[in-house]
Image (cartoon, rainbow, N blue to C red; front, side):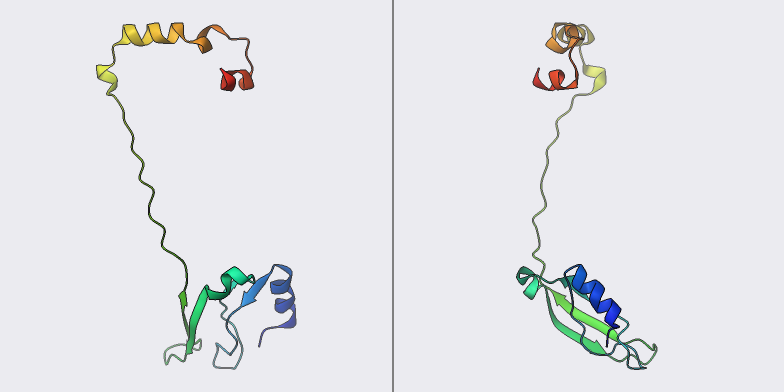
Length: 113
């Protein structure tokens, strides 16, 4: 059983304790599985099991988490070797840039330019 002060903290932060039984051989609940106490998270934690382990005074907690796997975002970068840059053309492009000549702009002006 959780301490009443711990229950107050969980309630204050909108957390739900999924372990309802003791997790220690002395009968106390020491190990927790917490989630937000919102309806969306109702299926977040399922198949919770508490098993006694012969080598520890704590019980083993296992559960399934209903977290969807997200597809990785693929990013593509292109670059040119610095050794292959035509420096005269690059310098000319910088000198012709609107940002090069307008030094009186503040940061917002550079963003808009």
